[in-house]
Image 1 (tube, rainbow, N blue to C red):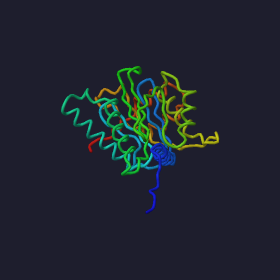
Image 2 (cartoon, one colour):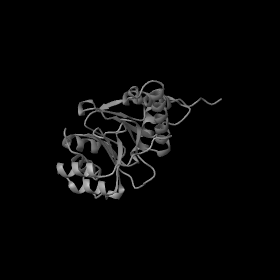
Image 3 (cartoon, one colour):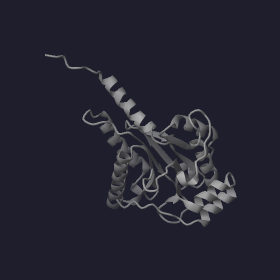
Image 4 (cartoon, rainbow, N blue to C red):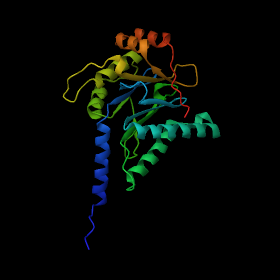
Length: 255
Protein backbone atom coordinates (compact mmCIF):
# COMPACT_ATOMS: atom_id res chain seq x y z
CA UNK A 1 0.00 0.00 0.00
CA UNK A 2 1.47 3.34 -1.07
CA UNK A 3 1.91 6.19 1.39
CA UNK A 4 -0.36 9.18 0.67
CA UNK A 5 1.46 12.30 -0.52
CA UNK A 6 1.54 14.82 2.31
CA UNK A 7 1.57 18.59 1.95
CA UNK A 8 1.59 20.75 5.06
CA UNK A 9 -1.37 23.13 5.48
CA UNK A 10 1.01 26.10 5.37
CA UNK A 11 2.48 24.98 2.05
CA UNK A 12 -0.94 24.23 0.59
CA UNK A 13 -2.20 27.74 1.44
CA UNK A 14 0.99 29.31 0.10
CA UNK A 15 0.58 27.43 -3.18
CA UNK A 16 -3.05 28.54 -3.50
CA UNK A 17 -2.08 32.15 -2.80
CA UNK A 18 0.69 32.03 -5.41
CA UNK A 19 -1.71 30.54 -7.96
CA UNK A 20 -4.24 33.33 -7.38
CA UNK A 21 -1.62 36.11 -7.47
CA UNK A 22 -0.20 34.90 -10.78
CA UNK A 23 -3.67 34.80 -12.32
CA UNK A 24 -4.44 38.34 -11.15
CA UNK A 25 -1.07 39.67 -12.34
CA UNK A 26 -1.78 38.49 -15.89
CA UNK A 27 -4.60 41.02 -16.17
CA UNK A 28 -4.32 44.74 -16.83
CA UNK A 29 -3.95 47.09 -13.89
CA UNK A 30 -6.59 49.55 -12.73
CA UNK A 31 -6.49 52.42 -10.26
CA UNK A 32 -9.01 54.09 -7.96
CA UNK A 33 -8.30 57.63 -6.74
CA UNK A 34 -10.03 60.20 -4.59
CA UNK A 35 -10.45 63.68 -6.04
CA UNK A 36 -12.14 66.81 -4.75
CA UNK A 37 -15.68 65.89 -5.83
CA UNK A 38 -15.61 62.12 -5.46
CA UNK A 39 -13.79 58.96 -6.52
CA UNK A 40 -12.53 58.11 -10.02
CA UNK A 41 -11.95 54.62 -11.47
CA UNK A 42 -9.45 54.33 -14.35
CA UNK A 43 -8.27 51.24 -16.19
CA UNK A 44 -6.99 50.11 -19.56
CA UNK A 45 -9.78 48.10 -21.17
CA UNK A 46 -10.17 47.76 -24.95
CA UNK A 47 -13.56 46.06 -24.57
CA UNK A 48 -16.66 48.26 -24.62
CA UNK A 49 -18.90 45.47 -23.27
CA UNK A 50 -16.89 43.69 -20.55
CA UNK A 51 -16.61 46.34 -17.85
CA UNK A 52 -14.12 46.41 -15.00
CA UNK A 53 -16.12 49.09 -13.15
CA UNK A 54 -19.79 49.01 -12.23
CA UNK A 55 -22.39 50.56 -10.00
CA UNK A 56 -23.50 48.49 -7.04
CA UNK A 57 -25.87 50.93 -5.34
CA UNK A 58 -26.56 54.64 -4.96
CA UNK A 59 -23.14 55.74 -3.67
CA UNK A 60 -21.18 52.51 -4.09
CA UNK A 61 -18.95 51.49 -6.99
CA UNK A 62 -17.16 48.23 -7.79
CA UNK A 63 -13.84 47.61 -9.53
CA UNK A 64 -12.13 44.29 -10.20
CA UNK A 65 -9.02 42.81 -11.78
CA UNK A 66 -8.51 39.17 -12.72
CA UNK A 67 -10.80 36.60 -14.33
CA UNK A 68 -13.90 38.27 -15.74
CA UNK A 69 -16.36 35.43 -15.15
CA UNK A 70 -15.35 35.16 -11.49
CA UNK A 71 -15.56 38.84 -10.60
CA UNK A 72 -18.75 39.24 -12.64
CA UNK A 73 -20.39 36.59 -10.45
CA UNK A 74 -19.26 38.51 -7.38
CA UNK A 75 -20.55 41.79 -8.81
CA UNK A 76 -24.00 40.34 -9.50
CA UNK A 77 -24.10 38.89 -6.00
CA UNK A 78 -23.22 42.30 -4.58
CA UNK A 79 -26.00 44.00 -6.52
CA UNK A 80 -28.53 41.47 -5.24
CA UNK A 81 -27.31 41.87 -1.67
CA UNK A 82 -27.55 45.67 -1.89
CA UNK A 83 -31.01 45.65 -3.48
CA UNK A 84 -32.38 43.20 -0.91
CA UNK A 85 -30.92 45.06 2.06
CA UNK A 86 -32.05 48.45 0.79
CA UNK A 87 -35.57 47.14 0.15
CA UNK A 88 -35.85 45.26 3.45
CA UNK A 89 -34.42 47.98 5.68
CA UNK A 90 -33.41 51.37 4.32
CA UNK A 91 -31.27 52.63 1.45
CA UNK A 92 -28.86 54.19 3.94
CA UNK A 93 -28.22 50.73 5.43
CA UNK A 94 -26.39 49.69 2.24
CA UNK A 95 -22.75 50.62 2.84
CA UNK A 96 -19.40 49.83 1.25
CA UNK A 97 -18.18 48.38 4.54
CA UNK A 98 -21.11 45.97 4.72
CA UNK A 99 -20.60 44.94 1.11
CA UNK A 100 -16.86 44.49 1.66
CA UNK A 101 -17.60 42.19 4.60
CA UNK A 102 -19.88 40.06 2.42
CA UNK A 103 -17.23 39.81 -0.30
CA UNK A 104 -14.56 39.02 2.29
CA UNK A 105 -16.58 36.11 3.64
CA UNK A 106 -17.18 34.74 0.16
CA UNK A 107 -13.57 35.05 -1.01
CA UNK A 108 -12.22 33.72 2.29
CA UNK A 109 -14.45 30.65 2.16
CA UNK A 110 -13.47 29.87 -1.42
CA UNK A 111 -9.77 30.43 -0.73
CA UNK A 112 -9.69 28.11 2.28
CA UNK A 113 -11.78 25.38 0.64
CA UNK A 114 -9.82 22.49 -0.80
CA UNK A 115 -12.76 21.45 -2.96
CA UNK A 116 -12.28 24.25 -5.51
CA UNK A 117 -9.56 26.53 -6.77
CA UNK A 118 -9.21 30.05 -5.31
CA UNK A 119 -10.73 32.93 -7.23
CA UNK A 120 -8.21 34.80 -9.37
CA UNK A 121 -9.65 38.21 -8.56
CA UNK A 122 -8.86 41.35 -6.59
CA UNK A 123 -11.70 43.74 -5.80
CA UNK A 124 -12.13 47.37 -4.84
CA UNK A 125 -15.36 48.56 -3.22
CA UNK A 126 -15.72 52.34 -2.91
CA UNK A 127 -18.37 54.61 -1.43
CA UNK A 128 -18.53 58.36 -1.93
CA UNK A 129 -19.56 60.40 1.10
CA UNK A 130 -20.86 63.92 1.60
CA UNK A 131 -17.25 65.12 1.82
CA UNK A 132 -13.78 63.75 1.05
CA UNK A 133 -13.25 62.84 4.70
CA UNK A 134 -16.19 60.41 4.59
CA UNK A 135 -15.19 58.60 1.37
CA UNK A 136 -14.47 54.89 1.80
CA UNK A 137 -12.25 52.63 -0.33
CA UNK A 138 -11.72 48.96 0.50
CA UNK A 139 -9.39 46.58 -1.32
CA UNK A 140 -10.12 42.86 -1.15
CA UNK A 141 -7.37 40.48 -2.26
CA UNK A 142 -7.99 36.89 -3.33
CA UNK A 143 -7.82 35.50 0.24
CA UNK A 144 -10.76 37.55 1.56
CA UNK A 145 -8.79 40.00 3.70
CA UNK A 146 -9.95 43.63 3.77
CA UNK A 147 -7.57 46.58 3.38
CA UNK A 148 -8.87 50.06 4.15
CA UNK A 149 -7.26 52.35 1.57
CA UNK A 150 -6.96 56.12 1.49
CA UNK A 151 -6.22 58.44 -1.42
CA UNK A 152 -5.38 55.91 -4.10
CA UNK A 153 -5.16 52.18 -4.74
CA UNK A 154 -4.02 49.99 -7.65
CA UNK A 155 -4.87 46.33 -8.32
CA UNK A 156 -3.96 43.80 -11.02
CA UNK A 157 -0.92 43.67 -13.29
CA UNK A 158 2.05 45.58 -11.87
CA UNK A 159 -0.03 47.06 -9.06
CA UNK A 160 2.87 47.39 -6.62
CA UNK A 161 4.87 49.65 -8.92
CA UNK A 162 1.80 51.73 -9.81
CA UNK A 163 0.85 52.11 -6.13
CA UNK A 164 4.31 53.47 -5.36
CA UNK A 165 4.02 55.97 -8.20
CA UNK A 166 0.59 57.13 -7.01
CA UNK A 167 1.63 57.40 -3.36
CA UNK A 168 4.36 59.87 -4.32
CA UNK A 169 2.16 62.08 -6.52
CA UNK A 170 -1.46 61.86 -5.37
CA UNK A 171 -2.67 64.71 -3.18
CA UNK A 172 -5.92 65.80 -1.58
CA UNK A 173 -8.17 68.21 -3.44
CA UNK A 174 -7.19 67.24 -6.99
CA UNK A 175 -9.62 68.09 -9.77
CA UNK A 176 -11.08 65.29 -11.87
CA UNK A 177 -8.81 66.25 -14.79
CA UNK A 178 -5.72 66.17 -12.55
CA UNK A 179 -6.65 62.82 -11.01
CA UNK A 180 -7.39 61.33 -14.43
CA UNK A 181 -4.08 62.55 -15.82
CA UNK A 182 -2.18 61.06 -12.86
CA UNK A 183 -4.01 57.74 -13.21
CA UNK A 184 -3.18 57.47 -16.92
CA UNK A 185 0.46 58.35 -16.26
CA UNK A 186 0.65 55.61 -13.62
CA UNK A 187 -1.00 53.00 -15.85
CA UNK A 188 1.23 53.87 -18.81
CA UNK A 189 4.44 53.04 -16.93
CA UNK A 190 5.89 49.63 -17.82
CA UNK A 191 7.68 47.43 -15.32
CA UNK A 192 11.05 48.76 -16.55
CA UNK A 193 10.01 52.37 -15.85
CA UNK A 194 9.45 53.46 -19.47
CA UNK A 195 6.18 55.08 -20.52
CA UNK A 196 3.81 54.16 -23.32
CA UNK A 197 0.79 55.96 -24.71
CA UNK A 198 -2.70 54.72 -23.85
CA UNK A 199 -5.26 56.19 -26.27
CA UNK A 200 -8.59 57.36 -24.92
CA UNK A 201 -10.50 54.60 -26.74
CA UNK A 202 -8.61 51.99 -24.70
CA UNK A 203 -9.50 53.58 -21.36
CA UNK A 204 -12.44 52.73 -19.16
CA UNK A 205 -13.25 55.59 -16.79
CA UNK A 206 -16.05 56.02 -14.26
CA UNK A 207 -16.68 58.24 -11.26
CA UNK A 208 -18.67 58.42 -8.06
CA UNK A 209 -19.55 62.12 -8.19
CA UNK A 210 -20.84 63.54 -4.91
CA UNK A 211 -22.03 66.74 -6.66
CA UNK A 212 -24.66 64.95 -8.77
CA UNK A 213 -28.13 66.04 -7.62
CA UNK A 214 -29.64 62.59 -8.14
CA UNK A 215 -29.41 59.75 -5.64
CA UNK A 216 -27.22 57.60 -7.90
CA UNK A 217 -23.69 59.02 -7.95
CA UNK A 218 -22.07 56.60 -10.43
CA UNK A 219 -21.50 57.64 -14.02
CA UNK A 220 -19.21 56.61 -16.85
CA UNK A 221 -16.87 59.08 -18.57
CA UNK A 222 -16.81 58.35 -22.29
CA UNK A 223 -16.39 59.93 -25.71
CA UNK A 224 -16.00 63.68 -25.99
CA UNK A 225 -16.13 64.23 -22.24
CA UNK A 226 -13.21 61.85 -21.68
CA UNK A 227 -11.21 63.46 -24.47
CA UNK A 228 -11.78 66.95 -23.03
CA UNK A 229 -10.67 65.84 -19.57
CA UNK A 230 -7.53 64.21 -20.94
CA UNK A 231 -6.72 67.28 -23.04
CA UNK A 232 -7.31 69.67 -20.17
CA UNK A 233 -4.41 68.16 -18.21
CA UNK A 234 -3.83 69.85 -14.89
CA UNK A 235 -6.16 72.79 -15.57
CA UNK A 236 -8.76 72.74 -12.82
CA UNK A 237 -11.09 75.13 -14.58
CA UNK A 238 -11.13 73.12 -17.79
CA UNK A 239 -11.65 69.91 -15.88
CA UNK A 240 -14.61 71.29 -13.93
CA UNK A 241 -16.31 72.74 -17.01
CA UNK A 242 -15.90 69.51 -18.94
CA UNK A 243 -17.52 67.57 -16.13
CA UNK A 244 -20.50 69.95 -15.87
CA UNK A 245 -21.21 70.40 -19.58
CA UNK A 246 -21.13 66.76 -20.67
CA UNK A 247 -24.10 64.44 -20.58
CA UNK A 248 -24.14 61.75 -17.91
CA UNK A 249 -24.10 58.10 -18.89
CA UNK A 250 -25.48 55.95 -16.09
CA UNK A 251 -24.47 52.34 -15.73
CA UNK A 252 -27.49 50.21 -14.95
CA UNK A 253 -27.39 47.69 -12.10
CA UNK A 254 -30.49 45.75 -12.96
CA UNK A 255 -29.29 42.21 -12.37
